[in-house]
Length: 369
Image 1 (cartoon, rainbow, N blue to C red):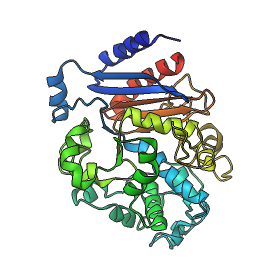
Image 2: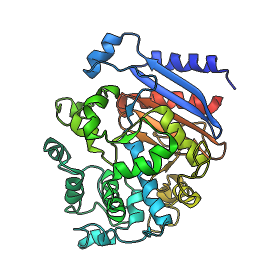
Image 3: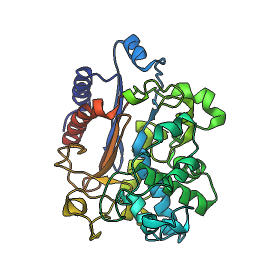
């Protein structure tokens, strides 16, 4: 095991020999955080010119974590199942208007959670909807109009819009707005005080400047009104990618998963059965899926397993049973239940540019702690 100063020095070497502007990393085990690394490019002026907004430097910096949002939202839905409010094999048509037609009728809640619904990742008119400041209800309604890419349960293909529909079901069952539900049921009990599913609109003026701005992919650079850094996107609370958080807050979430639903203080937050279901291979018994989707590249509920032979593996030094998720804004977290370890790596550089650097940092952590 590397001593912390040596580990931090090696992490700094990786960051300094990359194009990263900012990075925050936390890692540890079931007992708590063991590693905390923060990186800011030395040429601050260069960083500001890239992102277009002055760089914030909080004690615990906040990031838009993108698709790491998905498993967090999914755990809320699975918890409702544990409370007897839903069954995972219930058709979506019983909850969401427009799904009682054609191939949409066969989509179940389980399909939404395992990316086997046939619903697209993004809608064909995604950019147009954002330009119009579409609401989450608008995204769900437009999803109900499409024809699925394949019959539910026959393929496994990443679907952000499946999570958009899942959020509608959660809100309908609880008669609550999802951001508030997550605050009450998850963020507050875990002490995740720098986490929101979308910044509260009434606090956005104060909070926007406390979240690191993202470097933007090409398709967003001319979209100042609706890109990742816009007030619209930061306050929308997209259940497929709109969560704001920190490395330390996500570490508390990881510890809760390792403790099977208990917080770092020992208080029950989610039930044991919820964590067990979310972290179990849920595609194994879908008979119509290919062998690769059922066994080699499985999904839990919301959480993805480590795929050692895939370009998006979490680390070369984690078992295939480890779970985690990537985020398009340059974020990644993993949880290894066998060794009771976890890691969170947050950057503000798009995934396509930061992936290799994040994986190298992840390898160093997985091989060192």
